Amino acid sequence: MPIRRFGGHRSLVSQNPKLSYGFTKMNVSRSGYRVFSSNSTAACTELAKKITERLGVELGKSVVYQESNSETRVDVKESVRGQDIFIIQTIPRDVNTAIMELLVMAYALKTSCAKNIIGVIPYFPYSKQCKMRKRGSIVCKLLSSMLAKAGLTHIITMDLHQKEIQGFFTFPVDNLRASPFLIQYIQEEIPDYRNAIIVAKSPSAAKRAQSYAERLRLGLAVIHGEAHQSESDMADGRNSPPLSRTTTGHTGLELPLMMAKEKPPITVVGDVGGRIAIIIDDIIDDVGDFVAAAEILKERGAYKIYIMATHGLLSAEAPRLIEESAIDEVVVTNTVPHEVQKLQCPKIKTVDVSMILAEAIRRIHNGESMAYLFRNIALDD
Image: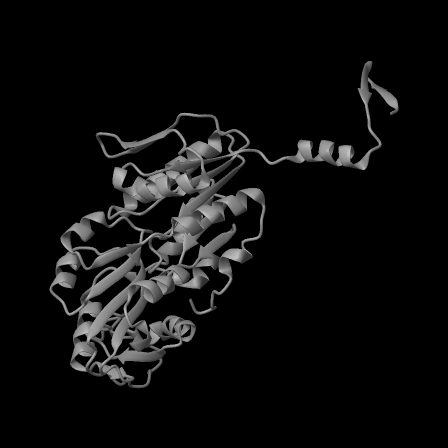
């Protein structure tokens, strides 16, 4: 074994390729990682605890709280220099406070020299505001810019309301799917599910419902029509400038007369008579549409009605309305805390998705492929 000298010190350099490989691997070994929760409420840390238990690590030491004037304060109690940091943020009813907690913690970790800051946000807030409506704004795009500015370098989320939202970000976004867990629930927990039919509560939800129907080898039905008043189009600026103003010169362009929209009554495309109806959607918040859909399905002969959704926001009077409706069961995942709603309505059931979130964290830290988590996933999920 030859001996070489470096700066007056003697070192042994082996010509054995195995020893040389081991020396190289030691130099490029990946640094450690920490998992933090940026929630100030105990109910929102339950998912973070389940994820860390599956990973076999302890939850990072930090304190997140509100000052007397409602300002958010974050204190990180351990060193994060040069490490991969995963921030788990579940979104409670107070959405804006949760967003501020995430931003402040991400910035605190950034200024503490963390190597990478990955946000684990199972339900991405403001995801419904991803399109321009009249003189509004695309708030989802604004939020993505704020997260990047705060220091996030990667995001793990689940079932974005629109997949195109990933294009708002300047860093990678892993949009995981809850469909395998919900399909497993259907197969194991719904008796005689072979006699079921998958229902889309609107034509826009038909692609997602069709994906479930194809994998479960079931039929498909679509509810067409509106049960609620749509947004008014009267204040769209068609009378601006006022008609009384006199103008000289160019008189302006005369637009063709637009026919008024006529909302069709609710109808069901497909036979649901004597079947179990399973309504598929990504978010269940204001349950008015679901309650109206359940009544229509009951009238058409469905004898049991299930609602399957990834994110159970269940705001306002949702638990009471579900309990008093024709809906037999509402199945959601634990991406959003809803323990209070479950106490108010026994029809609400929960599916745990902490396993796939923990596996995503492990794979990202180890530099492994994420393709395994998307096997058996259809494009329309």
